[in-house]
Length: 448
Image 1 (cartoon, rainbow, N blue to C red):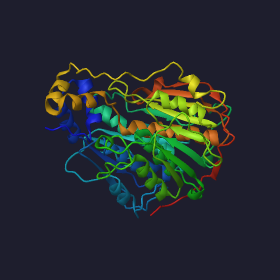
Image 2 (cartoon, one colour):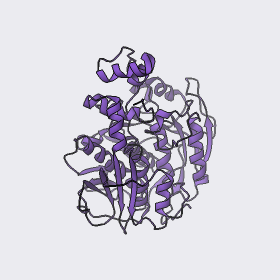
Image 3 (cartoon, rainbow, N blue to C red):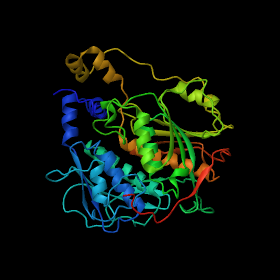
Image 4 (cartoon, rainbow, N blue to C red):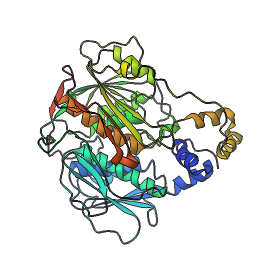
């Protein structure tokens, strides 16, 4: 079996952890199927964001197919720029498909009967909390906050994938997207917060595209008032299909900024592109966004961000190996916490061009040559559901900053062990030049 570069970065998880060949890993991924069951009460923006996120990241992980059943003929209730008249049509537009037989795993969104056979996990949310549990174990609330739907779906897809690897021993998981709430002070409701109005996105890879997915899911009263700058120099390749939510078949060779621009323009955002990498001499101009979302994967560009002139930088880093691919780090920097000082003395992982001793890589070298093998061996491992969760957290932090609220300056977590999530003390971020685009437009209906 030839190496399928579409799923090579995902296959490395199985190759590196389970000691199997790339052929065996690809065969396992292609056999994985996922079913998303939609209950009749799953009608809110959060519920539809959960369904669509589960499909978008799910079909890139469960490569055998993701089918959506249940109450899918209902009108689409989502701010995402997916132009369809029903939830089922929207799911098909972004990767939902039919397959025969019992699914490998099943995700339940909304209230529905427990399926008779097979492994299932339910999702839930409450305010800014999102999580997974046994089907029917949690109350399920109507919510206009799409971010909790995105987070819950990402957790569920990740849990389903872990179950396939024999590593899921508890269906319960929970994350608080607004972790500053205490017994004395509740988190603000979604109706009370302000949405970000001007953002500079640096890096349009898997995490950068997840940023755009989450931003587009927000119910802006007037998306045209939102100014975005998209900066990246890379083009989309086959390897990006399994990791990046905006990548479609046939878009290979297109600039990542262009793919991001098309999505953002469909939403109605005001967009500018910078089709090159960030350099040390970059500076803001007068009306440029003063808040940055950083999704770069190198240390040096992060240090350059300090001199550009941003009031606030929300920086996300992800794990890169089969042992830590579901790890994320989210840090917030401002004039009191400069990003270059934080990363001072840190360097990137060295590239190792030596042939790995594992038999799988030796066979791969025989198939595609030493240079091709080295490229695959040195590539980072990535799964799209990790980026989706990290983006939902990062955009929640950006909303807190925009709304003048305190938030943790740093957070490190791992999807497979959220109970060990580490949060730094909360801070008030100085982002006076950030601006906002008003409050959310609640009760938003279909985009189609």
